[in-house]
Image (cartoon, rainbow, N blue to C red; front, side, top):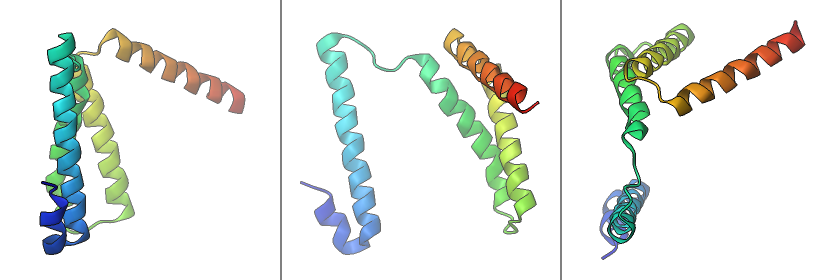
Length: 119
């Protein structure tokens, strides 16, 4: 049974969004199980969870300051800066993979090329 029929009359557009999210999650879960069962391939490597863990820790650290109620431009920019620093630190603590190091080196090269153009 489609969950839209249950949630839309009660919650409206929010119910439609929740029902669609639930449906997409269930379909994705079934596809992951199918890939593992048919091909004996695990689609998610442990290294894919590192950015999620790093972002979760950084976001959790920002929940309490953001609930104070006063949002100014300075507090928003400082929160973004703190998030980026915490995210980078967590990625370093969780140890970067070779692919991550390669992407960082490409990013550094791109930035140095742009800085040389403007210098």
